Length: 173
Image (cartoon, rainbow, N blue to C red):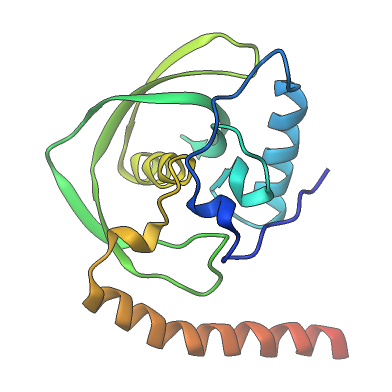
């Protein structure tokens, strides 16, 4: 089932999410719905609060495979950082540069309530940290500089205009 994205001003995007309760929720179904929705919206990560669910869960692509991350805890982050353009399904057309660690290791549960521990580097680390921020009510643009954000906002006007034009063009065909 494809879940609807909440609007960018939804208070859940600024909320620290509740611990996922395996007795209360169907983790297998949530995994399927998050992954289906992530693919539908053409993302590489999707947190539960982006689709209106208050639970510490996100889906992501890691090493070309889909992964569900439940109740994650960061163990270590690398000292080496990189500034790179980042986007978010909740903020269409906005692509500021964000500074993030190059690597992160974390422990979490999978959909079967099994303990997992993985190390993420490069793009996977960026996606993990972006989605982890969502679980804590932190938006990706909260981690950028005012200068980088102003550039991204100016560019977003053109990007959104182009997206609307393409959408209207496909309706007319």
